Image (cartoon, rainbow, N blue to C red; front, top):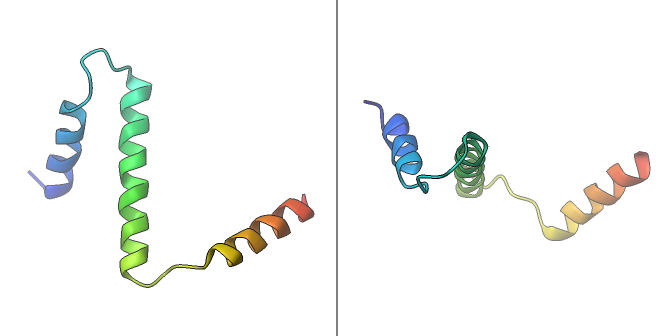
Length: 63
């Protein structure tokens, strides 16, 4: 079994027994987003808080 599959199966198994499909999928999506963020950080693909605020303002103004 692949490392990715093992990791995701472990996450599923750690969820409460009464978890809904939506809750499990949300947890898996969150895990993937965190892993991507960490990979971006490790790869130096980051921007400052100020730059992010500027981008948010620009997109808000364009809407």
